[in-house]
Structure formats: structure tokens, C-alpha cells
Amino acid sequence: MTTNIIIQVGLYLLLLLLVTKPMGLWINTVMAGEKHLLSRLGEPLERLFYRLAGVDANTEMNWKAYALALMSFNILGVIVVYVLQRLQLELPLNPQQFANISADSSFNTAISFVTNTNWQGYSGETTMSYFTQMLALTVQNFFSAATGIVAVIALIRGFARHSAQTIGNFWVDITRSTLYLLLPLSLLLAVVFMSQGVIQNFDSYKDLHTLAHGTQSLAMGPVASQEAIKMLGTNGGGFFNANSAHPFENPTPLVNFLQMLAIFIIPAGLCYAFGVMVGDRRQGWAIFGAMMLIFVVFLTVEIAAEQQGNPLLTAVGADQHISTFQTGGNMEGKETRFGIVASALFTTITTAASCGAVTSMHDSLTPIGGLVPMVLMQLGEVVFGGVGSGLYTMLVYALLAVFIAGLMIGRTPEYLGKKIEVFEMKMTAVIILMTPLLVLAGTAIAVVSPLGTAGIANPAAHGFSEILYAFSSAANNNGSAFAGLSANTPFYNFMLAIAMWFGRFGIIIPVLAIAGSLATKKRLQPSSGTMPTHDVLFIFLLIGTVLLIGALTYVPALALGPVIEHLLLTSGSVL
Image (cartoon, rainbow, N blue to C red; front, side, top):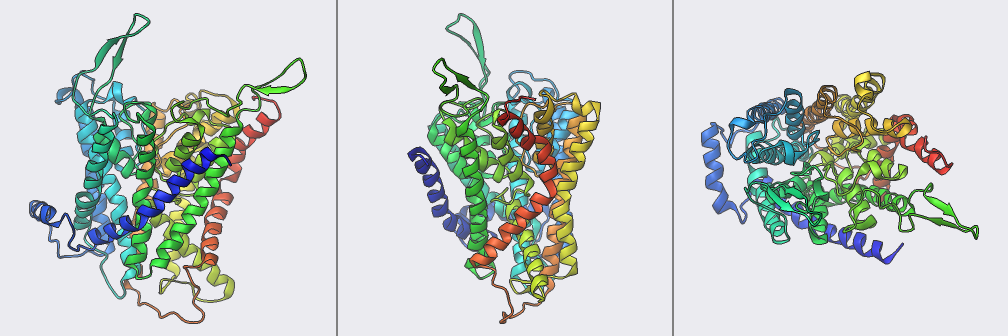
């Protein structure tokens, strides 16, 4: 391990650990409705919102009413984002006079940003007006992130409460998570980004003369404001087509580091908030530890794969010594200002956290380097994951882990004093099987359909990997892409939209059902037969459950893509 790796990775992990507890305490304070630093400024706004919306902030909801409110809010979001794109040319703040967006692309983008996926089949700087970028996309970056947060808070209340019929008020939760958590952090981060050179303006595009006596158009726009929430909300949708590899979005190593830190701070903080809310902080650290161990292992593999480079790029000299053209590792598709280690770190973070932002071309990764982000998504985006979604999915795996352990030792499964019974296991099965069904069925349809194979830019195993990656990204609400697949077609726009929608709400609704069921249960007192769920044994049991489910589900598909590509590459073949 080089000094460069130790410094970059070590500093990142250390700072993440340091901010986890303060962030968790802040989340708990905000979502519990306690007084805090922003109360004097925010409470009048909060009461105004409730009055305008006709919401009684003192009335809580059962899980069905909570789910109905959540779905209504997000369906309305889809309609608004779709309409704004379809009427873009007639709306203000469109200095480039970009045309209205096609129906299939508008539908895909609306679903994408509402589900926190931010899959982009278009080039932002040549397609979207400033008005659309701000009112449609950036606004949904806030609301989709807040939706994930309130869903996991509802689940945590299910664990924390006993003999209760309610899990909170959706409208209160969505308001507080946006007003006191996402908005202040985004404002602060956007100001820091602007100080480092991330642009924020409403200017027309600049036509400049190049050294080669040509002209080049430089896109302008309100970038910093979108960039901040894109990272903090684990959204990932970039203002520019090059996303975080673009110097106007990510100009310096400091901005790059802060973007990586921003992706994980809320998911990590939610782990600690979970421990606080259930009354046992060790539980939160256990979940955090499981996520961190998986992350470090996958990061190690990613860095090693990219530093080795492409084995086919070698040459034998006259002295019979083998010299490689990639002596510094695989720099193809990477920004020289970041290098291999920072690029590999960003790739692992963004696919572990369902963010989807990229600083390098994933299509240019080595086969094993491409397998790592693909598997991280296929595990259910539980390695910190999206804001809220990572933790609620990991808690579902925790329920499964204690259920399996209970069967093995012949005891009634319990987690945090709640019996895990038939209903919880049915909902757990729905959650765990939903995304594999969407990924594998979608990939199968695409590879046998002429409309699906028409978008493949590369032959054989790599082309299959491009499709498998696309559906893994969509169904798990990540949004990143291999980028070798031409996906902005009616076929992929509708197929991926279906995967994104059910990959999001086909999981959130069962999660809320589990929350409602757990809230009604009495809390059992720990006994000599109760399995501890905060120690090292449970952490490894949880990790084993996550990896085993992922391995059994996706290994055959991975064998047809990155695994066989790696074997062919090491044997000296490109096909």
C-alpha cells in the first residue's frame, strides 16, 4: 500500500468517522421536533407551510396513511417535472432557446429525479434550460432525498415505539428534513464550492477563441446550487454531461474531496441517529461498522484493479523484457487532476451510496474495476447507500439475519425487543426480491430484443455488462452508467423508468408496512436467550447475509459479463 493511498483513503475515513456522531445527533434533534439553532428562523416558515397545505402537525398517521401521503407527493413530483420539460421552450430562463424535450425522455427524467436515481439519458448543457435545471431537477433533488430520509425515520420509529398505531406525520417529516437538514447543508456547501471555482450564474453561453484559431462554446449556469444537493442528497445528476469530471462542477482536489465526503455524511449520520432513537447507540455503530467493513474491502479491490492496468497493453523489447504501456495503472477515462486513487475512491463511494455522480468513465474501468461498482449496486445499495434508503434496506437485512440465526438455534427471532414474525418476513422477501427481479428480467428482455441490442456500443461480454450495469443502476436507484450504452431511446427510456419506479417505491411501501407492524408490537425484555445485535458476531452475520444474498442472486449474470471479460483479458483475448 503506497503513501498516496494511505493519505487519501485514511484522511477520508477519519473525517467521515469524526462527522458521523454530530450529524446523527443533528438528524435526531430535527426529526424529533426538538428546539435547535434554526428553530427561531424556521418554525414560522414551518407553521406557514402547514397552514397553506391544511396540515395538522399534531396529528400522526398509521403506516397506510403515511404511505398514501408519500406516494401522492411523489406522483405529483413526476407530473410537475414532466410538464416543465415538455413546456421548456415557452418558459423563462432559457437563454439558449433549448427546445421542448421529447415525451419518452421527459418521462424517464421525471421518474429518474423523483426516485432519487438521476439517470440521465441526455446531455444537460445541450438539453435543459436553467429554469428546468432549477425548478424541476434541483427541487426534486431535495424532495427525493427527503423522501428517503422520512421513510427510514418512520421505520426507526417502528422499532423505537411499542403498542403504537402511528409512525409519524409524513408532511411534518418531509418539511423538517428539507428545511432544517438538506437546505442549510446545501447552502453552506454551495458557498464553499463557489469559492473554489464552481460556477453559479444565469449568463448566456460564452463563445471563445481557441489557440487553434477555432471557437468553443462554454456552457454557463447555476451549477454550484445543484452540485451541493446532488452530493448531499446522494442524487448524482450533473448539470453537465461529464458530471463531476467537468471542471465547472469539480474544479479542484479540495472540491473533489468535499464532494466525496458530502455523499456519505448523511447516510453515516443516520446510522448514529438510529442508535440514539432506539435507545442503544451500540446498535447504530454496529450497522455503521458492517457498512464500513464492506466498503473498505470493495475499495481495496477497486484500487488494486485500476492500479494494475490492462494486461494486454504490454510489449516485449529486444532484450526480451516485458514493459507495459500502463506503468502507472489504468488512466483511461480518468482525469489527470485526480489520478487513479482518487478516481477509484470516488467510483466506490458513488456506487456504494446510490449517488451516481462520476469523475471517471466507468466504461473504461478494468473488468474487475467495473465489477466492483456493479456489485455494490446489486447488493441493494446498503453500503451507506442513498440518504435513508441505504439504512432502511440494511435494517431489512438485519431482520433477515436475526430470523436466520433464530431458526439455526431454535429460538424466536427478535431484533431490538421486537418479535420478527410472518408478516415482517413476507415484506422482507418482497424487498429483497424486488430489485433482482427488475435487474435480471430487464437485462434478459434487453439482450434478446433488437431494440435493446441496438444500443450496445461494444461487442461480447462488455456489451452485456453495459446492459446489466444499466438495469442494476436503475433498479437500485443509483443513476451511474457504463456510458457505452446508447440508452436515450424509447425502449430504454421506458424500460429503465419502470425499473427505477418499482425499485424505489416497491421497496419503500413494504418498509413502511414493516414500520407499522413493528410499532404495534410490545417490547420484549432481553433474556439469556436474546441474541446480541451490537457485537462483532452480529456484524459479521449481517455482512454474511448481505453478501450471500447478493452472490446467490447475481453471480450467474456477473459470470457472463465482467468475470468472463476478465478471464478473456488475462488470457490475451479481447473478445
